[in-house]
Image 1: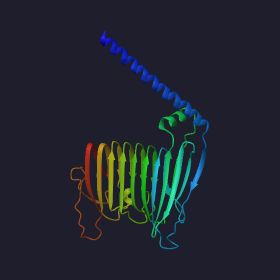
Image 2 (image 1 turned 90 degrees about the vertical axis):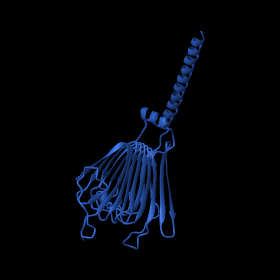
Image 3 (image 1 turned 180 degrees about the vertical axis):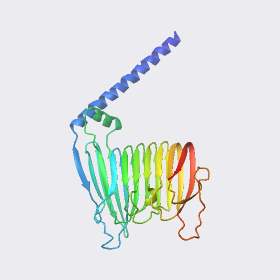
Image 4 (image 1 turned 45 degrees about the vertical axis):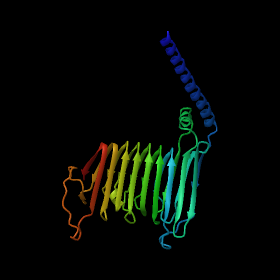
Length: 298
């Protein structure tokens, strides 16, 4: 009799939890339906104080900080002579876009932040009920101004094209989403450093040789990565690859020398830095845990 009583208590407890869950879903659906009826879909443009062109005066470099989540994001070059600008389309009842511009004695800092202001469950319910879900932010970056780029992205999709820009260094962090970085043409000057940190998502980085960073860090956790190092390398680079619980494929160009990949299966040729015209050297350091890094030379 005692065991049956415990069973009955547990059953009523489970039913209670189920009723609570159904109540939460029902209330969320009701709120979402009202949210769909109140949607205010608008396009918005932002632009900070105009940045000097390199042709007019010594370019005044700055720092661009992008904090983006819960949408589709794109970063692309703007026309020469134009400053940083932002275009966005979103429901102002469900998302918030904000920016700030700070002038420093010898530089500037421009911050852009985009976030969802409702819960993920409510957003899902709005989509199921036929709400407008087209949400995007486009950031235009000038090619004639030196810029330190910082990107923090989460729970969305990000595409970045840096070809032809003047990026001095870049740090990119993303989680719970997809990310694509391409450098289709050489930068105005080689990068000092490029760091990509991904967690719980997948990303690809194409033609990083055109950025020619002196230091490259790629850190992937609980996801997959496709890293293409081909491009116009102008100098040596320290390449640090770290993988945890995932997979990474790395394409190494034939035009460079490499060190640190003796066990990768890539045929290496010795470099002679004392000989003029020796190809750039990529110094690899690889760390992998519960995953595998595959190398291909092309």
